[in-house]
Image (tube, rainbow, N blue to C red; front, side, top):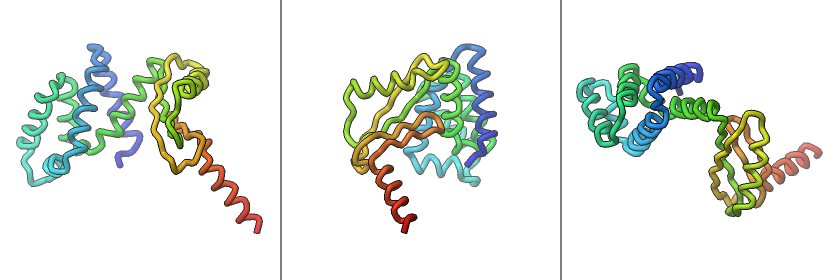
Length: 182
């Protein structure tokens, strides 16, 4: 895994490049699309990681993908820099850092909510309002998933913070407490 400091440097450099021509959204879309293609194809990953494949051939593969997606100049150059420096497999963590920086600038937070059953619009809105009380937050985006193994309650992840209010977690805490009391 690429160390956090290095991924932050790449994300910061990308952000500064985007600041010049206000291409943040385009670059985010381009790199997200590239990452989706890259992650889905083990053949592509192996070709781009294989030291016996000439760099010109690797650049040709990337160029084909860039043309297919309709990459902008910054996105194309950034992917090639990652290729040249052997960091292409770390694009996902760099992209996450970049997106977090964009969110912070916009006063936006992303929350990932997992529940035992699908949440209704009122429940999602209640979570959104609670998260919007955080200072500097103007917009909350919530992505929901369902995991029946939670039994009940919700797990909310915002950045590196996890709020686990699931029944599964509570039962595990009770089990741990009871076994420690023996």
